[in-house]
Image 1 (cartoon, rainbow, N blue to C red):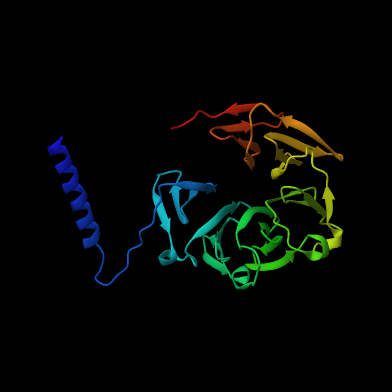
Image 2 (tube, helix red, strand yellow):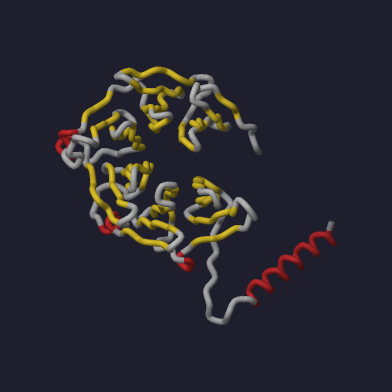
Length: 282
């Protein structure tokens, strides 16, 4: 055992010496923690992972790993949220200080509007929904609309009474109707006819239960949400309980599948709301 420990220490020291020897004198090296992954995003080539404010990716084909930081083109330090848009082939990167990066094959473009904005709330991004060439960001004060192709903030929706702040947890768009979930309320407006900047065009949708709703998504062109551990869908003015086989804490949509998360498992839910439960990995 002592011999093995000695060999491991020697190998570790040797690797450290080789790595340091490769660095030119006076250059900087970035050290981040990549051990605790909290968010994932993906495109056809890569899986992007957010770990303790740092970003890296794994290539699906050759499993090579790439790390991203200010030294590699990013404009902020502590990343709070990531999401990939297939339509524009863009990874949206939101930092805790309000900076937003749009990373594409052509490089990284920074949007600083939220960073410069004076607010009484945090500048965290709670959720992002892509629609057309725009990203609708759920924030602690309302909804921020980003034009991805122009790399600019296009609008801000203050949807509370008298245009007050509302902490929006998630946003979903179904048949050109935009829904914003605050937990205790769901606000909605018709994107085809409403002036979404005007709070008076936003209305409230009754929840299916007295409990809060934690997530809303567009699944198979239906509004679906989680309340009291169950999944409900909204259609033709009524809520229907659709999934109660497991206690669901949150949901997302990927590749036309509804993903339901419990405290320790993942359920892959099909359009008929049958499900496959992924095995637990320790």
